[in-house]
Every structure is written in structure tokens, then in C-alpha cells.
Image (cartoon, rainbow, N blue to C red; front, side, top):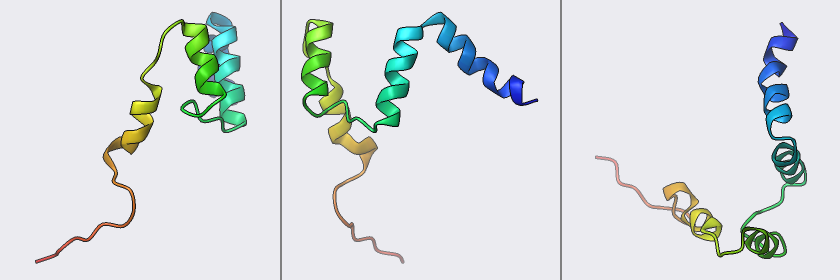
Length: 72
């Protein structure tokens, strides 16, 4: 049963080992892809500017700070 839960992880690791390990390490270290030096390194590797910063700035539609609501 435990092996069935880990099968997708091993499958992804065997298909894309470098991408998998990069994502795993960045998640373990809690690296923010929109901050330097990670952002500049990613742009250098991709060879162009990416939209990582704009996706992070939107915060998935959430506004910064507290909001006031009215309940009728």
C-alpha cells in the first residue's frame, strides 16, 4: 500500500531526474523563484525573461493587507 503511493514520485524521478531534483531541492530550501539570485539564474538558463514575477505578484487574486466586508 505504501509503495503504491510512492509510485508516481519514482516514475516522475525516472522520467525527468534533473527537473525533479531541482524542484525537490528548491521546495526543501523554500526558495522563492521570483527573488534574486534564483530569478537571475533562471533567466540566464532560459535565455530570456520569464513571467515568474508577475505570477507571484498577483498572489492568486488575493489583495495585500486586511479587507473590509459588509454582511447584510
